[in-house]
Image (cartoon, rainbow, N blue to C red):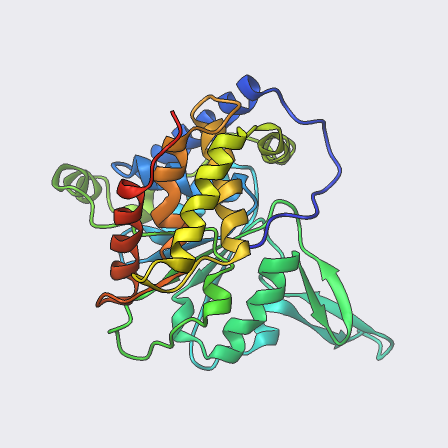
Length: 322
């Protein structure tokens, strides 16, 4: 995840109350489809509004594609889906230059990355070379083909799904790519009553998707995140947490500066979602694991779960500002 350095010119940012109303409208629309997962829906929207990317690690068939489709629809954006496989090439996702119809100049044919929400399905089934093709798009909001850069639409978010590492035919994501994801979440299985409802309604494929916002409203909502304040004492709390991951013996690798920026940006988006124009320590506590656990390595067994547990322990020990 890289912070959005470029946004399409558009309407001025909203006041916090107006932005919160837009966020809640979009969240309610997604929750109409993705039921029983309110926290996942809220944090997924936080990732989109903050201009970041989302990594979902879970078993196949629990609604990750439905979440991506509902998100794209709710914000009034476009969705493209890429099924990552071992034979997928970088040009298959970025686009290629093709010869004109009459043999004239080459013309750029955009790939599936040119959408507001890109569902990178089973991203760890592709080879590292193809996975790395996403890095420029996720970092710079553009792709370069044959030396020419092409800017991606705004907003732009990659929602990548990842199968558990013990699944056959998976390749681990490189640390540099993991660091580009603003949040890492898990959908989990639906509860019993919601699963019964899915069965009776004809399954997830029968879900109906409709917009809650248009793209101008979504861009206004994204811009409103910049207006959310973080008090210096809360900022110190964030920096203390990051510093612990770099010095404490429980961690092998600490949080990068990009990770620090990610937690700062995500906490401002979450504050806006909760109806506030300022960040409180509880925002940082709630986001610490989904934002940081995939960016650090812990000495305990289990690369991701161990990191999450170490961060959880640090959050309990670290004095929070009153």
